[in-house]
Amino acid sequence: MKRSMYGKFGGQFVPEVLMPALTELEEAYDKYKEDPEFLAELDYYMKEFAGRETPLYFAKNLSKKYGIKIYLKREDLVHGGAHKLNNTLGQALLAKYMGKERLIAETGAGQHGTATAMAAANMGFISEVYMGAKDVERQHMNVYRMELMGSRVNAVESGSKTLKDAINEALRDWVTNVENTHYLIGSVVGPHPYPMIVRDFQSVIGKEVKEQIMEKEGRYPDSIVACAGGGSNAMGIFHPFIEDKEVKLFPVEAGGKEMKTTEKEALHSSSLCAGEEGILQGAHTMILQDKYGQILESSSVSAGLDYSGVGPELAYLADIGRVTPCNVNDDEALEAFYELSRLEGIIPALESSHAVAYVMKMAKTGELGDLVVISLSGRGDKDLETVFKLKEEEEAKEGKEASL
Image (tube, one colour):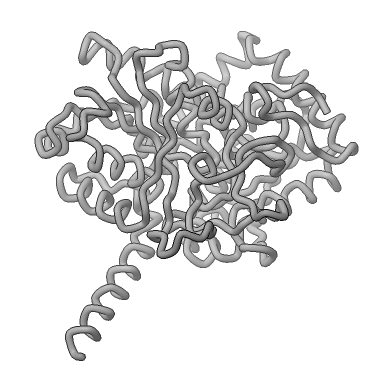
């Protein structure tokens, strides 16, 4: 195992067979990350294919209602509907320079899988995506999108049938096909150098915010709020501000259903808030686990936040107090989903709704300050069926109670 990258967190806890692949990846990234030809090609894809830069939008109606200035970093406007393409374009291009022929990926909400399928189709790769069976069911339109672009989608039936299990299956594939295959990890998780690589490709979000907020307000925000599952969206907007200590950083995790007992249960996906140190998917980080060290199943209305761990750098930043972890529950996220849709005409992804919900809840406490940026990580089209079903269930429940 190599040294940890982020204090006591990070590292490379993987089978020996994968060490050469990780070394190859790290060496290639070190070689090309400052290469003018690579960067020029990546810039082309980011502008002409992904549609960057994305707007920093002043949410005037939301701001008026909640009494503070709220800006939305519109990653929902990236091609494909989420920030995920920033990373898949970068990694796919890196794989191309490395001479790989095949891409594999894991996905939760389907946005990373879709972004991988987009990059693979555009750059001529064979691609396969692993997705938990539970997520395949609740995000079947994204499954169709991936298949439409030529990617094979493998439904994972083991474990909790969500993102954690999809990652495990993708790792097994990579071990078998490491010579011609690049594993395109979608978040700041996994063994080094993945957390660093994904963070760097996603940092375009925060770099743009720095310039845009100075142009609009003449200063940095008091707070930046972003949803956090694995943490790619959060680290993407946070990282350029890490040294700007006057800017508070709030990663918002999924609180799942409201806890009904004091017993520690996996009714949430709050690894930073409720997790413990452990090893998950090749890295030492904060995870949800029982007293025997077994990974607990996470639960969230949002497929993209339904993960039992968090990226090691986020764990480190929480440990040293640079970020302030928090969470909101399913009902609060759904309320924010409706609120932003009605007030601003912007339908947010359920993942992003968690960040909006936290700002709604905390705006009047003074904790966030007077100027806040929310990373709107994705659009909510993919979640309309989920929200509609929940609405029907709630109406049916109310009707049944009224008839008693």
